[in-house]
Length: 227
Image (cartoon, rainbow, N blue to C red; front, side, top):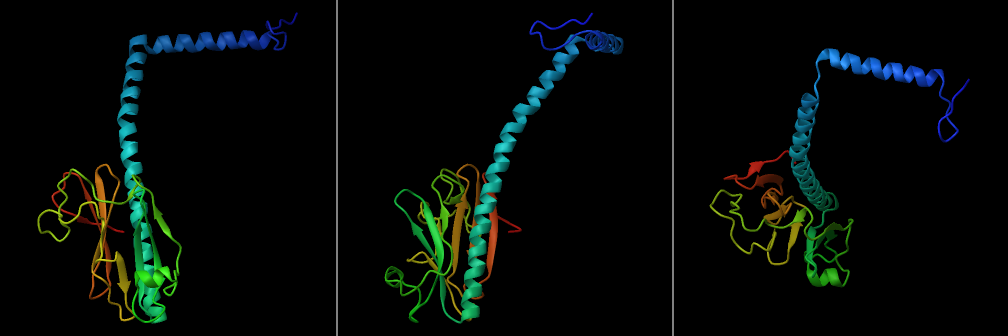
């Protein structure tokens, strides 16, 4: 005779009896190995501790990756700006704009009338935008300087000075200009994860060379970065 479960759908019979035998056999083997309830509880505690430790580390890794990505996008735009100036034999600028909500955006603009990249020429579209616009949202990994920390000057001369609310150090117009001869506006652009890390992308005036440095809370100086 075949037996059915209470919902009338799943038959019991041999399969049910086999399951009971298998479960009893497993229980006997566990008992033979000497695994006690206290040992299982201890294992669960260890797993819980590992999970608690891993969660903050995962958060740190995510913040570091976000800052690395923001720095990489900005540095890539700088490389393109320099290449555009040399290949097209016209001055080209990386323009930074701060918005009222604390966000930033930047883009590449080309000199349209031979007098350099000027704000009034950007407003009149005399100097056209020749790239996509890179956006940096407020409080997200992007342009900024970590507040409440002793941030060293990347040049090695004590503490970072100036307006610590201004992450773009590129002259009065927040424009980094690259010339057809390979020169550039000496500049430093700071980025942060608003937690414990910073990066700076620096441009050397004489050569137009672009480098990236990294710093985190507690370090006495900036360190070279692969990107």
